[in-house]
Image 1 (cartoon, rainbow, N blue to C red):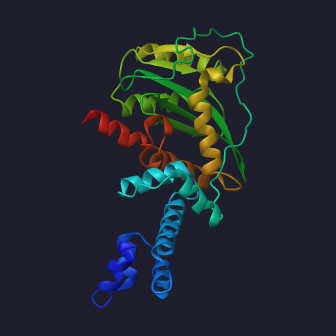
Image 2 (cartoon, rainbow, N blue to C red):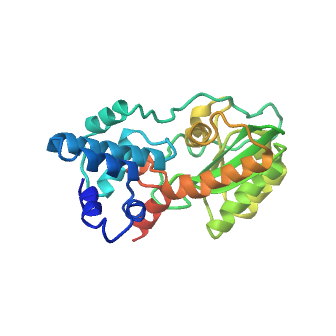
Image 3 (cartoon, rainbow, N blue to C red):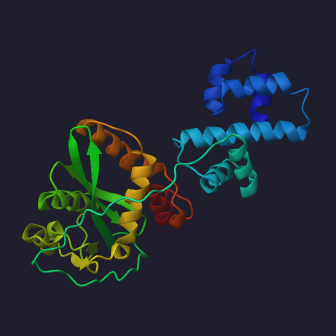
Length: 288
């Protein structure tokens, strides 16, 4: 409401399109408000203004945010809005956030390779960076066939600190993901590294990489996906928010996953376990 009033007061000085961009409101919303401002009660005007802002945040999140995350964005703008009010606004505008769906497990643990004890034991909390990392592999369908993604997540901030993609699900896939994490985090020591019992993680190549860098291997119990719930949850989020109903080439898929992890997820996406901060913002605030 106040933004529209500002735009009206300065319309003779600045272009409406320019002010809309700077103030993060829509031009159409401004013209609706301007056309109806004398016909609406203050309550109706506030509702229209709030609906426009809710929709703008929803669209800016690429239709991924539900009411709770929209509420946090509004709060950061200095606007305290009841969660029920936001839900009503979304319902009125038919704004439905993308919801989680089930996906298949890719782990192949039928092998005779040595396995590590479950050091993590479903304790997904960490009091400092580089205390506990979790890792997993998932598959992504493209128009050219399968593409496999391995990620390494720091449980302290839920940040994806390492990841790798390949057309083959080999030991090199997980080694590349771990190597990225080690480089980004300046090669920390004594990190608990938790994964499933997949042959890639049990391989001599990967176990040697853990040992060489003084990391503590930990593995889930056989066939128990809940022992690695955080990485499972990340793959749910990725597939629903970024990959739902899209068919891409392998190169396009790589670009999309890069953008989602490095821009949307690590830097922008609010995480409920972090008080609705993004992983990057959480780490910055905790370090301050």
